[in-house]
Image (cartoon, rainbow, N blue to C red; front, side, top):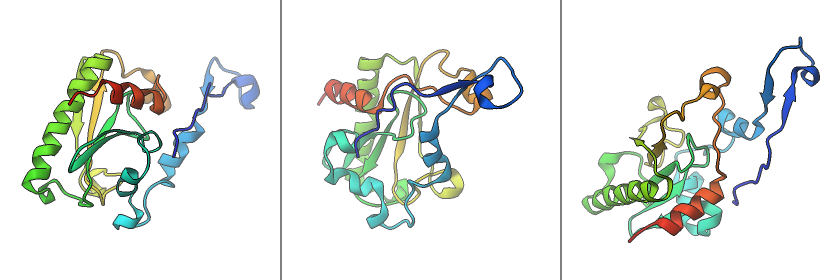
Length: 187
């Protein structure tokens, strides 16, 4: 699936919104509804329904894959918290970190480190959030397949949008970020 080119997102002022006039502009992000409603989430935890299992069979550009290793791969998060938000996934369909074998665990760590080095090189973030949500109760959107989030952070990147409007402004299209990171990936 090629990442959609949304172009300029539609905005409306209160005159066209149909409400009481106010000073707010409304930024409509209808593409986020797919994530919020769970429409893109697998129906089961089985590998045949898993987008992370399907991704390696597609082209890097279509699957937003940045790097392919022997046992794990790195790809862009389809619903990023910030530009450059990557996921590290094992090829094997497992749900918990403790299910990785020793070789997978070693490569998982090395690819995580390389992803951080690459993000530092191409995007110069001030810090990172790393994390794994294991199980639906822990917040895993795709609980059936282990994945680690690598979220680059910059001073001031938590602006008012998430706090007030529950909207995240991400300044770079996923395909552009994937190309930049794939080009900057080192051995």
